[in-house]
Length: 303
Image (cartoon, rainbow, N blue to C red):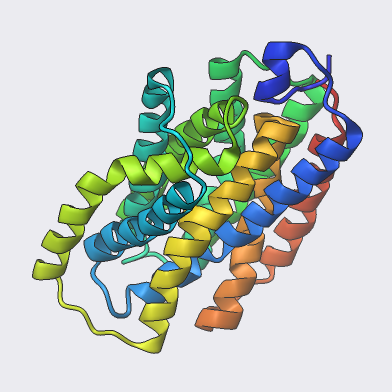
């Protein structure tokens, strides 16, 4: 049985090949946007405190999302979808940005990116529990192999010692995977962009006072880097990236879309070198090759 998206799982209708291809492209664009999140956050932390950057990025993204909803006169989502949107808020809008930002105060973006490379497997596991999807053994073997490569890279880089930053990152994995899974399910019953748009808007009554409070306690030193970083995590990572990501998940299914994210830590490593001047070790290209092979296998595996 082929792995189906949340939309087709409920209808039993097979997803046409063009839809799968377009969905894969959209999910890949989401991964590309997310790969810049950590370097952009590192830039933002040059001028903003960790609590400020998380709250302000949510407010800015909510303003963009709210403007789109108003311009298109989108009606409020049904009340039955509110619990799912709350999970998206807790995992994607608040939890993941906050936990990773706290981690990046003491961790390099390269190290954080590789730890978060476990996100695809975590998302696939939660999806199997939440959605009842049953990917094939080949799929799981390739997914576990990709995760093993990421873990081996992490252990090699950190010398086998877990830090407080690693604990933040592992917690971020869980909450983000829950948000991705629930968002992917909701994207099967409403347009993907509306999922994240409504999640951001519903969070605004909390993020707005949180931003005002954080800015009053944490000093701001506005620079070109900090402004660019904040704008990217707000518009690129928090809204546009999630729009195409949820649309992609709805088209090709949560498990397969999640495996595209195996490429995210490797892309982030490249950005960390180009934008932050971090050192890229010899192990990185070897991990990249192994991960890309795993991606190819998971995308071809039948459920």
